[in-house]
Length: 625
Image (tube, rainbow, N blue to C red; front, side, top):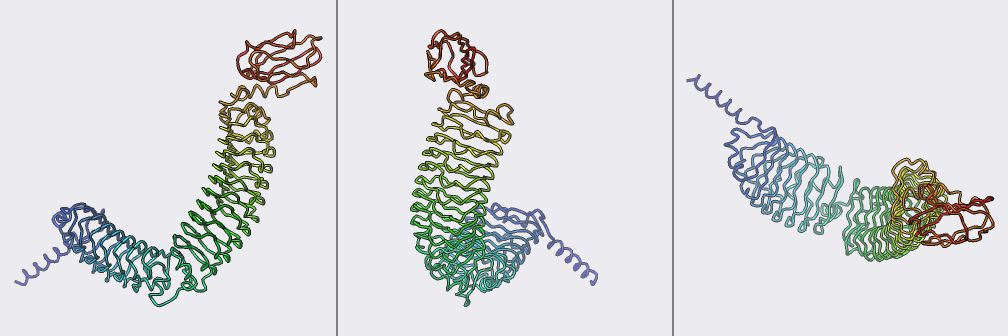
């Protein structure tokens, strides 16, 4: 009998061991109720899933078929289960080896069913549940290894279920967009905010849980500063209470985002001297930046955007440094940009975009360089750029596009070097490039396109080097490339001159020299005669010696269709007139017997006319209509 008992015990041990062994190392997905109901039949003895578990499906309503599970080695994801009303069935799970994602289960009211869960080796994400009122069921959870993110749960009122988590196991905290949540003072959250090990993003919940300082107040303490940021100021009362929320906090780490239509002034922020991160001022009702007078540096970007009442940027004359982009975007009441006069450096882009009433940029009196782009786009009333008078270099692009009232570039007169591209596009009133008179070097492309009113390029006379592409296109009133004469042809790789309907003079020295030995592709077409093809330009370049004599002989009219006259010619000598076509070939030779010459037999196009006698020779360009 003793032997039978021992044998039974041994069989029981083997049976139990087999029942508890790990399984499914590649994980499993449950996408229907049947797959859950049949789990124990399909995977007998499977209590420790080694891989990930995904539960997803509109008809999943009951998890009791999973009640044998003890551990999950990977992550657990329960998402978009429209019929699921409870997590009962997961009651025996104690550990999860990866992330836990509970999201978009609209009928779930609490998390009861996870009461035996003690640890997660990853983040905890609870989001977008329409009926979730509490986190009851997570009281046994003591450790995670990642962030906690609670977002978009419209009926959630408290997070007490998280009270027992070790705050040292939390790496980041996000509580946002929970429109009924006013109580966030769970003990673990209080302890984490006291000494955070990562960033905190708390916003757009109810007052009491709208920022870290409000939670700290409910927890019974005051935090001087957030060591890792971030600061979300979405209401005027948060601006007004800033010095109370964060006493003696002058240097802010992380991002500072000031957004909210009820924010009318920034006066409560007058203790801030520096931001070791970025600053966004967006979609407020402020009329100026007063309140930021003490701010002297921003290490990240600085965006001023979509502030429909902003009329002045006064308040930032102590700001000396912006480490990344400075963007002024869609502030439609802003007419004059006067300020930022202590700013000496912008670490990346300086951009003015879509400020529809902006007429002048007169600030920046100490700004000498922009490391990235100077980008001025779609400021339809802008006429004055005098604020850039001391700017001598742009590290990347100088970009002007869609500034419909800008007639010239006066104010940019100190710029000598642009690191990559100069791009001037769609500036409909731009008559000249005056203001770029000091420009010496462009690192890559020079693009001048779709500037309807542009008459000349003379302001570029000092430009001697570009690094790549020269493009002159769709400038309807441009007649000559004079101004580009001094560019080193060896610095041009590709050339495009097209769709400039009045452009007839293209045989400037730089273009001629480039076409004699091009480094890349050449595209010339749809300009006026004389510049309508590469061959026409080359022909004009071949006779670029123009008059070879001081004899004051000239051809008129020019252009002409049927006849030309030779002015100031004396017929007492034997005189010959020769017409060279675009390829430099003789098209016609005529012995002159009068000062009137029939040209009706010539085809339309550009010709070089050589008039010579026994004692002199002159050459002139002529266009046959």
